[in-house]
Amino acid sequence: MQDFYKTNRLFCLCLVATVGFSIFLVHVAGFRGMVSQISGETERLRNVTFVIWDNYGSVKHGYLVFLSMDDFEKGIAYSNHSTLYLFFMYFLYKIELFLPSLPMRATSAFLEMSLLVAVIVSITSMLQKERIRFGQGVLFLLSIAFLVTMPGFWISAGKFNVDNPFHFYVPILLIVAFVVSRGIVSGPKLWLAIAALSLLAPIAAALLGLFFLGLSIRADGLSRGMLRLGVATIICSVLVYAQPVIVSSILGFGSKNSSWLFRSGLDGNVTYFSNVINSVIAPYFPRPIHLLLVPLALLSVQLLSMLKMNTADKASLAFPGGSNAGMFYQVLFSQYIIACLLWPQAVSIHPYLYDYLLLVPIGVWIVFNFFGSISLQANTRIWVLALLFLISFNLQQIAQVKKCKTCYYPAWPTDQLKLP
Image 1 (cartoon, rainbow, N blue to C red):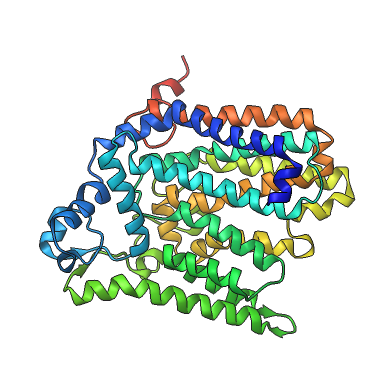
Image 2: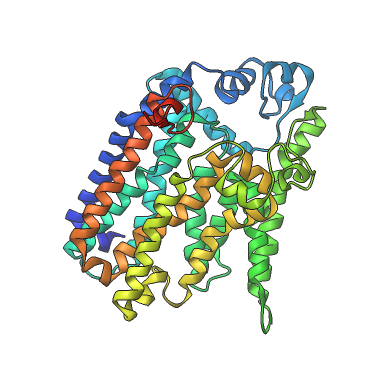
C-alpha cells in the first residue's frame, strides 16, 4: 500500500477528494433530507431498544432487540442480530446523544461507504505494480463516484431500519472473495475475515459457508480444502448466531423472529411472495426496477465492448484475480444468489436490504473493468460522458426521494402520467 501511494500520490489525493465530494453531493442532494424526515419517527434501535438498555439492567434485556416497548413488557424479543453489531450501533447512538448533528443513521452510512471504497482501493493497490495512467485513473475515479452515489445504498441507509449490518459486511465479503480467488482456502487472513463476518452477521457467514460447500463439489470429486472451509464457516456462524438465541431463552423471552419456513416461501403464504422471479423484479415492497437495471446495463455494455474490441481483453473481464478471478465474482455474488435460493420471500419483503447484495458486486465489477480494461480506456472520452450522466442520474434519484415525503423510492405522481 505504501509503494502504491508513493507511486501515485496525486491519484490518491484525487481519490480521497472524489469520495469526499461524492458523499457531500449525496448528503446535500437528498440523504440529509431522508435522515431528517425519519428522525421524527420511532426507530426500534434509537427509540426502543437502546432506551430499554439505558433504563434497565442487562439481566432484564440481555442486550436483545425489541420492536416496541409493549413487546418488552410482554417479554417478546427479536434475537436475530449480532450482539457485537448492536454494541457498535449503541456506541454510535451515544455519539448522536452527545452530538445530535451526527445521527447514527448518517454516521454508519458514511463509515460503511468509506470502508467499501477503502477495501476496493486496497485490493487495487496490491495488483497495480506500475504508475496509473491518466485515462485509467480518470475512469477509475468516475466509476468510484458512480459506486459511491448508488441510490439503492443511500435510500436503504436513509429510509429503512439500521439494525441490519448488510452494508457493513459486504466489504468483508469482498476481502474473502479476493483471498479465495487467489487459491487460498486457509490461513490467518482468511480466517480473520471469516471470524469478522460471523461476529458481525452470522447469518451471512452461514450462507457463505453453504456456498463454499457447493464449490467443493467438482467433476473429479470433492475439494477437501473448500469443504473444510465451508464446514468451519458454518460452525463459526452457528456458534455466534446461537448466543442471542440462548440468552433470550434463558431470560424467558418469547421470539418475534421470522421463521426459516416463512423466509423460504415454503409456508405457502402468497401475501408477500409468489415466485423467486417476482421477488427480484417486482418485490412485495415496491421498488423501481430501474435502480437495478441501470448499473446492470452499464456492466453489460462494458462486457460486450471488451469482448468485441479486443480478444486479449477477455482476461480483464475477471480482473482482479487473474486465472482464478471467476471465483472472485462467484463469491461476491454468492450472498444474493443463496438468499434468492433459500429465502425468496425475505428478498421480496426486504428489497431495500437484499438489493445491496446485488448492486455492490455489480458496482465493484464495473470499477475493476474500467481500471483493468485497455479497450475501455481506449474510449475514455465516451465513458467519461456516460459516467457523468449516470452519476447525475443517481443524484437525481436521491433528490427525488428526499422531495417525496410520502414514499420510500423515487415516484412520479400518478396524475403526471396521464395524457392531456
